[in-house]
Length: 233
Image 1: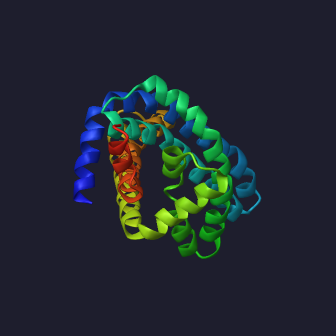
Image 2 (image 1 turned 30 degrees about the horizontal axis):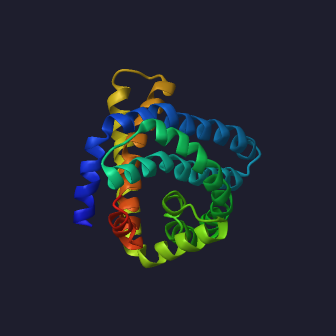
Image 3 (image 1 turned 135 degrees about the vertical axis):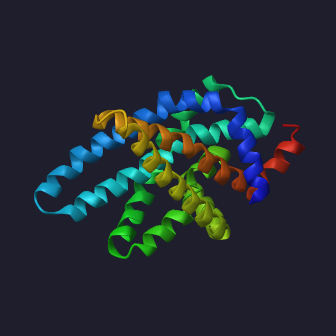
């Protein structure tokens, strides 16, 4: 894991400007859409005394948004590991290629993960970890619907310990970043919109670290790096 961390740190530093561009152009809009849809769909249930349904809707949409937001960073990391160069125009084009199939896959996975969260919590967490590499599988392999689910499950099952540690670290980093950002910005403004945008921006800038870590683990696990070497990259 230490070696993976070094590779990920170098990739993040060398592609930071491109990451920031993608965050501003793609990730923040996804986060804003998630927020708007969550408020619009869950508020009526909260008003009628059905908060569990509102929570389920938030969980369902959050998982989908989280997986979609990883796509451009997986694409960046794939380019970085294959040839050391990153063409942001290619990332934009390929994002739209993979966004819809991953969205369709996540409708199914997010539904069952949300059910697990609602009823017993632990099953939801386990299922989320088991399929957390799904966007990596789809982007790296571009396999059909059923095969993508199978490969993602196999990857999650065989790397469960690593994935849960990385996920917990990301959650901790996300929470700490949100708290620090909120405290700092609240010294200058009480405008909720600006506070929310600031938190979204910080969260979006930590997401590549998670996507890079999982992608590097998938490359190591699947033998992708050896394949690139054999093909002369």
